[in-house]
Amino acid sequence: MVVETKVAKTRARYGQHFLTDSQVVDRLVAVIAPRAGQRMVEIGPGRGVLTAPLLAALGELDVVEIDTTLADTLERRFGVKAGLRVHRGDALKFDFAELADRAAAAGRSDTRTDRTERLRVVGNLPYNISTPLLFHLLASAGQLDDMIFMLQLEVAERLVAEPGGGDYGRLSVMVQYHCDAELIFTVAPDAFEPPPSVQSALLRLTPKPKVDVADDEPRLATLVSKAFSQRRKTLRNALRTEVDTEGLLAAGIDPERRAETLSVADFVRLSNLLR
Image (cartoon, rainbow, N blue to C red; front, side, top):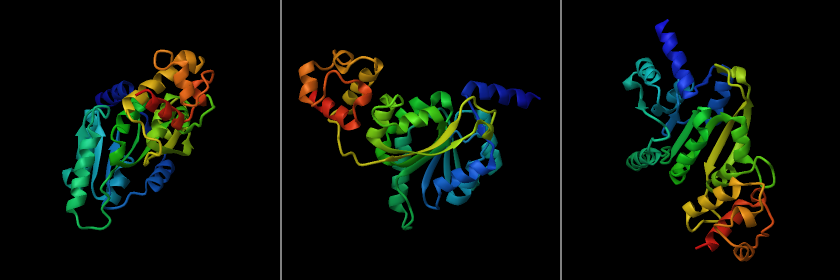
């Protein structure tokens, strides 16, 4: 009874919804398609339902788990010799770039031809931190091969949204600046325990070479954030502290347009004109 009480409190604290549907797990593993030699990190392994097949296919796996009770359980279940490395801590503070550097170093010292140097990141993300965690991961996008996440459907739809729709916003622009985004399939609440109050979706983010490159990415991020902070206003008004009417016209953008009508390339072009 004590253990069950502790687990229940942990779920409430960390917003955990554990994937329990074996068919969904099988579909998820098929999409990830883990292969021996790849370096992968799983965020929020929880009870290990995804950890087990990943570890079996890969031979070694890093996991980041904030819940110390679950982290201890994973180590007891798999053992330190199984190739599982459990990192106890908050994924929002975890240094994915450093782990990617270690993966690259391991790749350079390994003569096997199937060794992938860049890091793959997967996981069933806690919905209450999914957006800040995505921004945290984007800082290391150049060192990642791909990211495959179970997310709240509403968030996934925003990530893949195109200009002109209500789902298109700051998150859409900044993620699509770094990555190709693909919504793969949706998942009903009853696939989880406890069931969330929303639909979920599996999303793949693949870092890509940038066609339109921002001279100053923090400036681009600020510009996008301010443009969408008052999305019902025209760009003339929403960006009045960043750029004047002449600047918008110089970038080929009608000052009467609204933020959701601008493409990623439009935002990059405008940001670069603000040097």
